[in-house]
Amino acid sequence: MTRIVVAFFASTILAVVALRFLPVYITPYMVVQQMKQSSWTLHHHWVPMDGISHHMPIAVMASEDQRFMEHHGFDFDAIQQAAKHNREHPEKNVHGASTISQQTAKNVFLWPGRSWLRKGLEAYFTVLIELCWSKERILEVYLNSIETGPGLYGIEAVARQHFGKPASELTADQCALIAATLPNPHRFSSASPSKYIKKRQRQIRRQMSFVEQHLRK
Image (cartoon, rainbow, N blue to C red; front, side):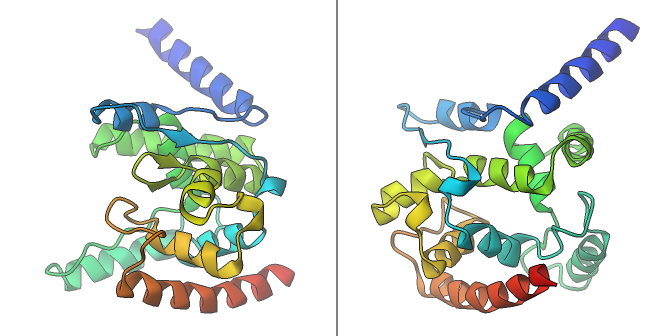
């Protein structure tokens, strides 16, 4: 049993350290999702951070995690607020409080699904990547591994498929539109946005200005 535990910690730490430098070309999440399909339809193109529009990190921070640069993997204020909302409004959509770091850990190292084991492993890998990676590296891996549509993973893939251009050429409005769909890229599309997604896009664009001002301080 001791050998198994030691092997687990050694292998996971080694994987996290290695991925601090190496591109992430495929993840367990991508494989499991593709296995659910009748045919292999995965589109994923790794690009470094300088190959992604500078508006895109701002857009995902504005939409997903405005305190990303300040916390160490977990936003406890957001967790408390989400828990309070869910207690007071159980009939409405459940609010989550996953940070970009948590989502990166989940997308890169874990499988789809919900369980206490998976949640515990998510917390473990979140701590590891916050210790071993820079914030810029976390964002780079996140933007390259996030699901952006059915069979689409990463910003480069959705930029090519939905906008006919590389990720480096995405405008601020297009970045906000992509970010608006991220909570559920199977239900919402940046190629044919609904009224709700267009409203979310406008909200994110306004928040992007606040995030940029905060980063300049």
